[in-house]
Amino acid sequence: MSELDPSTEAWLNLALDHALAGLHHNGGLAPEAGAMLRQSVRRLERYPAGALVNASTRKPEVKWIVTGWASEMRILPDSRRQICSFLIPGDVFTARPANSSSCGVVALTRMDCADVERTLDGSPEPIRPAVWEAVARSLSLMLERRYEHITRLGQLGAAERLVHLLLELRERLEAVGLAAPDKFRLPLTQEHLADALGLSIVHVNRTLRHLRAQRLLEVKFGGVALLQPARLADIAGRFDEPV
Amino acid sequence: MSELDPSTEAWLNLALDHALAGLHHNGGLAPEAGAMLRQSVRRLERYPAGALVNASTRKPEVKWIVTGWASEMRILPDSRRQICSFLIPGDVFTARPANSSSCGVVALTRMDCADVERTLDGSPEPIRPAVWEAVARSLSLMLERRYEHITRLGQLGAAERLVHLLLELRERLEAVGLAAPDKFRLPLTQEHLADALGLSIVHVNRTLRHLRAQRLLEVKFGGVALLQPARLADIAGRFDEPV
DNA sequence: CGGGGGTTTGACGAACGTCAATCGGGGTGG
DNA sequence: CCACCCCGATTGACGTTCGTCAAACCCCCG
Image (cartoon, rainbow over all chains, first blue to last red; front, top):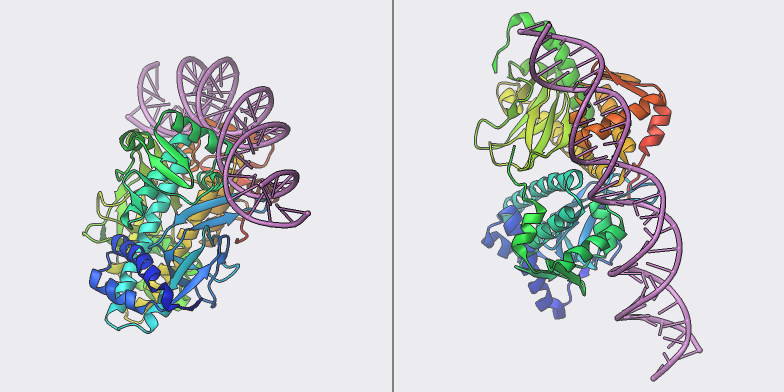
């Protein structure tokens, strides 16, 4: 949470490209409003991997991820963990005061966030409503993704779950320019995947091996390669029709 | 969706007691505002069991359940179904235009709803912000419940899932005056429970039998009796601590 | 009396978790 | 430079949970 170092200006602009693409894609933020928002970002909050992101005040704070990955996770008393969603650059989330929520946000890599309220504080007036509207739409989209996750956990088998999650991540990452159509970086351990999918680590590993043996995909070096996207989409069992 | 028949006035007041209790409990609606809202309800939308609730306009519409149960469900192309949440009197939900959502709202019993926007249309001005604020808080609470559902599906075993869901329903029903501390009506088939919990009907039945054999609870006549609430809460594995 | 929807039960097999051991790479102290 | 170590990935053997199939059953209603 420090003032930006001028030497990082280039890096920041690159990162903001992705993050603004996310707000544009998920929330429909107009490019012109995005350009103004870019100018307003003067302070980022930096979290190390593993850090818990709580609101610094008593009220929930909406934050916008500029760099890095995070997860919304819930921890059971007996050490079981459930990852409810993964957050990537361009996503917005609500940080709640400590001990007030049933679900906490935890950084999975080093992460830089902008607090939306504070960022808008010194920004040109006309973009305020546009940004908040984009944030609201973005949050509503994440809600829809939670329905998908529930369906994943309730109805799909292990391979289906895994592939379906990877395809969702590919799509979201591609929308912010962080994935090629058939490969992307995935800074997650198999334990993260297991915690998200409600599977054991061992079974995640077995399932990955099985998919690899069929030359459907590869996961290594912290990256994923989709070798046969069409067949993968088939395995995931597209279930996007409304009722 | 007809004008209210004066002969149903008594019934309506009774139903509104529950629904207003829900808005008060979930959304913090002040009793005085509730009393004014009660006067504003002049038209209810009635849905038969099994009906799909879509918005009648192009935009999402927020509705408030006065009577009956509903569910948010998602249907897969191969006939698998996932119930993402159960809705009871006093709950609010967003009805979306047909074919626009990944998750549809389906009435499980005969159901009466009030459209929030239309209800507020002819209501005293001062309560508008109070009602919308309560609706927003209520929706945010339902979001938290979805985290719980994800955790249920991802981390709990069959008996844990079942008991945990029943205890959640008991708590919510009790808050609107529709449950005694140890028993309540449950207008759901075992198939509904199976679809919500990601289990097969057969296994739901087996699990219920097992719980019944231990004299922990009974499910019959469309009602549930919690015989040993304390032990049940223990089985459900309270996992309410934040991260 | 017949029929249909929901419930109940048993037998069997597949999917998944657990335990335990090994492996491999990157970091760290000697 | 090497030995050591730790974390994550990997593998096999085995047991449990849960799904599937198929048949009965029960109750309400026509």
